[in-house]
Image 1 (cartoon, rainbow, N blue to C red):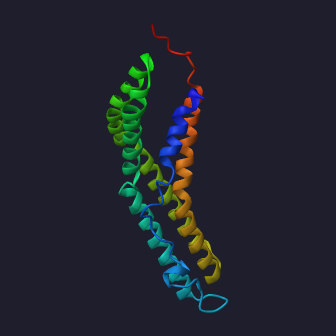
Image 2: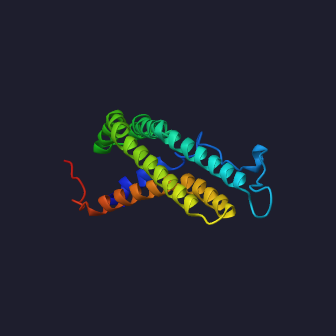
Length: 195
């Protein structure tokens, strides 16, 4: 269990990071735009171009969102500071002996961890998310260009927007996998003994 703790903590910190203030889906019926993508069953060149422009604009907004950090820093700051506050203000006073010192130490080190984590990890996650969105947009543009008719172009544009929307999750999954593999490779040294 202890060996998997870094991965568990990372998963808890990453949950919900990509949702707050994220761009809205371009064809959301709740926004009054409706979901009619084509003027007729076959779709016109204007329909295809309009769908591609909306998808392209959506992908750019998703990319910009992660360029601004995607609320990663706020989430990590809160989680680490809350953990440190709970360790120092709640658990340490209730603990006895060496456990009391350990919980107090955890509370004291939370601010140092907070700064280092925000400076390195959050930036790397944001970069990987932006790269995943850029790759999804590039692939979608190629599929749009390879489409045989306007209906396929509309379908390619919608698929491109969907790929841009879910690309950050793929980047997060890759980061989680790397952390899990790293945590699994660390050999347990056994319990720490104190006198």
